[in-house]
Image (tube, rainbow, N blue to C red):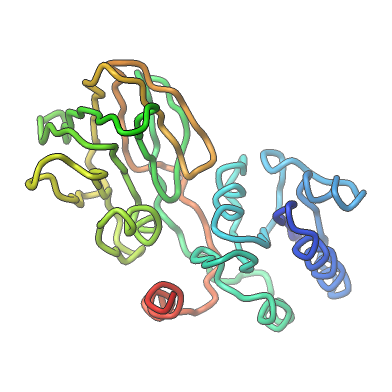
Length: 270
């Protein structure tokens, strides 16, 4: 089996672990490819994420490392996250569990598909997000005005510090901190969460995944759009965004852990 190894490169211990894990996999007859940045730090050949072809991607880091990998793939590769961060909600295994799990891994492992959202700005496709797209003001302490339509029908207009459009996977990330509900990732839909809205009636809304959201920035103030904390785009006054379910879902190796057990262990006990 061909395995791509990705690691955060701002932590020497994480990279050392990645090197040891690569050796472990090679010793079990797997072909191992290092992500380019990791390879450069280890003084070894590496492959850019967008060009990588593999049966499995082992990602060592926190949620940011997993989001970085998923966004960078040219073609989605099943991901196994190994937590080397604080919460690591997208990382299914802890470092001490990884070798035991990988010891018995074979081709034909179970894969879980996770919905992503596709975002376009003024008709230009910007990219896909696994967790969320966030619109925030470029000027602190200034509010933005939004107009939202669903399938072309006006749904709401409000003022707020910003707006977050999340997937079910992202409901345990920024959306949760902003007061949104936790959504089972097996349910597909689009979660809209106003950030500190200036109306009591502006509440989080969850809509079906086959709907298309239109968001217009009506404020005469600069704003930024951020996808998964990885990609930032400045928004002009009057910018029109379109958000829909992506046809390119993320893929995760199913390690048999229950989502709600993970919520209890990683979020309720922080």
